[in-house]
Image (cartoon, rainbow, N blue to C red; front, side):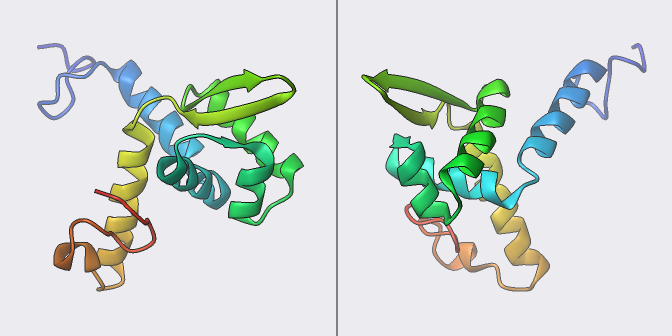
Length: 126
């Protein structure tokens, strides 16, 4: 097998590894993680509503949403002048949930083992 196309038995081409790094970089921002968590819980929200939830200005949230949209993590629906954002799929949510659970382990507080329906910090997470 070609060493450039095999990675530790996963069989993923190196290009996918680079794309995965880009996904992690996109989620390496607390505001964007909070946006993903908010959209996961609510399904679909406007910029202003998201700004209230994540306690940031609508302008800042809009810039983060633009990045998430370019990364195809969120999609939009326009109703008149209002734009509503929602997660494109549940992959970003799964990554965020797993990262929070890993963080719980890092500080010795894996609460998600006690209650798999409510990981700490994400209401309503599976």
